[in-house]
Image (tube, rainbow, N blue to C red; front, top):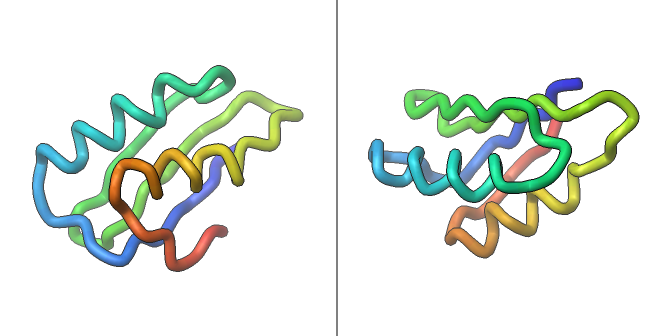
Length: 70
């Protein structure tokens, strides 16, 4: 299952690396793709795993404001 997070701002590669490291450390996350041009993060999680809120909290702790989840 893939979860898409629209962030307020996402401008630099080091921010993407910080997001990948933080979100990838969550148990149940299979992959993390950071789309700079669209300010989106796409996270693939294991089936039957609801990590939507957990990932949102991690993104917030890393300093990124989530505008929309789909």
